[in-house]
Image 1 (cartoon, rainbow, N blue to C red):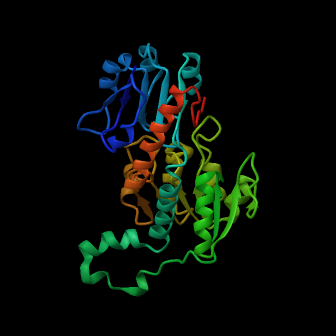
Image 2: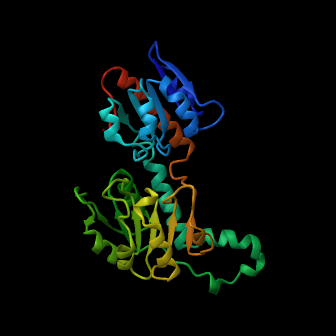
Image 3: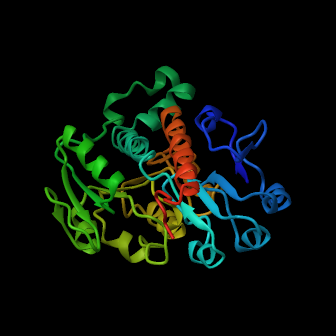
Length: 310
C-alpha cells in the first residue's frame, strides 16, 4: 500500500506507520501541481493534501486505487465529498489543528484594521517623520464594541473567548446550534447590530455569497467586516463596491474568492487589511495538522477512521 503526503515538512510525524505502508513526500516543495498530481495519483491508495489543493472529479476518476483522502486543514470544499464517497473514497480532515491560529489571525486583523497598525506600518516607511500627525491617525478601540460572529463552531467560539479579553460584547448567528453564554441573533439582525462582523462558516452551497450586496447594506456605516473563513462566503465584487462607496468603514481579509487573485481595487484602500491566506500557517499548526493526518491514516488502516466528513 502506498501513501502520498503532498507536503515536505514535519516528516517525522509519519515515522511510526504500520508495516507495509510506503510513504512518499512531495520532494523539495510544499505541493505537487495539479498536472503533477494527474501524473501520479493513480499510484496511491492514500493521499494527504492541503485543504486548498483542488482535487477535481477528473483527478478522482484517475485515482483507481485511492481509498483515503486526508485534508490538512479544517476545510473540505476542495473536492466533491459526495462523489468521493460514491467512488468508495473516505475523506477526513484535521479540524482542531487550525482553531487557535485562525482565531489569532482574526484578532490580529481586527486590531490591524481598527487600530490602523497595518496602515501606519506601511505608510511610515515612505512618509517617515511626516506621518507623525496624531490628529490624523485616530483609531478605534475594541473595548465596548459588539462583535458579531457568523458561524459559532470551534473557531468562532475561540474568537469569542479572545474577544472577552478585549471587553467586547459578542453576538452570533448559527442556523442550527445554540451556544450557551452568548446572544444568538438572526443573520440580518446581527449585521444591523455588530460593529465588527467576523465570518467563521465552512464553504458549501448554503454559505456561498452568504454576505452579498443586500447583507452588506444592512451593516452600520462604521462597521467593519473580517473574513478568515473562505473567500467565496463573501460576494467580493459587492464588497469592493460597498467599500468604494463608503457604505461600511473597512474590511480585513485573509481569504479571497478567486485565490490567489485579489481585486486590484483593494490594494489601494487604507481601510482594508490584506493577508495571503496565512490563518493556519504557523509552525505549531502545521505540525499539529501533520500529526493529526498521521493519526487519521493509522486509524483508517485499523478500520476506525477519524474526522470523516463524508
